[in-house]
Figure 1 (tube, rainbow, N blue to C red):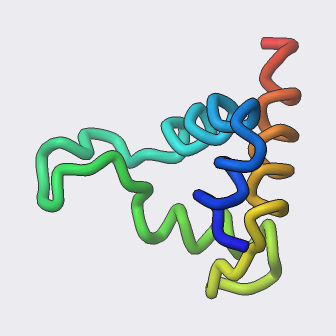
Figure 2 (cartoon, rainbow, N blue to C red; figure 1 turned 60 degrees about the horizontal axis):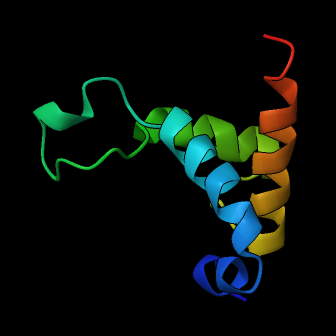
Length: 78
């Protein structure tokens, strides 16, 4: 099941996923095309390697949401 489909079925998880995605964005992302807040490729590869053991980044929608929820809970103490 795709992430969009999962979030349509679980709309309460959308803010958590959006916050997690925003934290992954590259610094000064607006300075180069495609002018979207996407993560730096090297950082993304590192995150996928630590999350899945592979750079391919193959995670299910549930795994993505679970990682976002976990990440938000880790930030509570800050």
